[in-house]
Image (cartoon, rainbow, N blue to C red; front, side, top):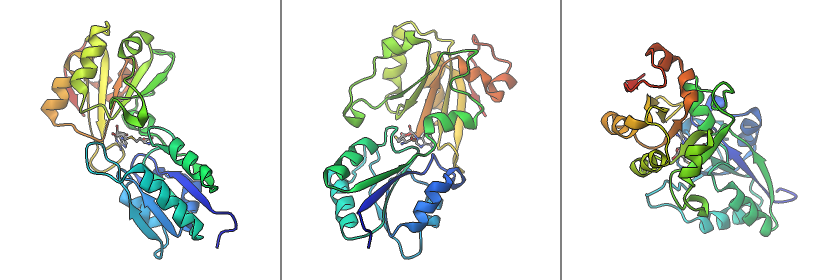
Length: 259
Ligand code: SAH
């Protein structure tokens, strides 16, 4: 039995289990119960003991999913029973992962929380193509935003302000609303020739990607059948990708590439 009931909120990274931190692996080895999200790579579960109970509590957007309140109650109940609970999330638990809400619910129930960060898809997916999202030659920083309005209880990002910000835009959950997002950015004056990248299933065997420009982003995604989970990167830093340079594209290029 645990002395103080504690739940470990663990970020498993975007895919490849080799991207787990050592701390995450240690926590997985200790756990007796694991509550697992949809986007967690199955290979991550190999680090659990054979005897650990695995409960899949996915929350994939648009699909029937386990209510958040039920997940909270389950974590609390298992921790109170003396189980060593790990809550495994894709990427980082605090980046569009409801980690904040879960911490709050656990603390309110008198349960201790340990948070183990993970590589977030918004940084790791572009990195898989050699895109440094804050490259100082092109940008002052990066904005991580959701394309799925209402996610995390939040409202629509201010696309017009983002378009004018000079920041690299990294959009999570953006594919389904791509026409709306692209229109909002273009209406606010973001140039059609702004470089863009789409990376789906990054760091998995199913990874696919395309490099293009904002003006043809929607067409490229549709034509190549790129779908969720995907990260969109919009900004000049995309030019740093070796695949972009191999195309000989400047920022005025308009040719779509599948790398
Ligand atoms: N906490 C996660 C994000 C969860 S929201 C993190 O930090 O990465 C789910 C969204 O993350 C997906 O819709 C997609 O936009 C993005 N995502 C997660 N894993 C991904 C992957 N392997 N490749 C591309 N995008 C991914």
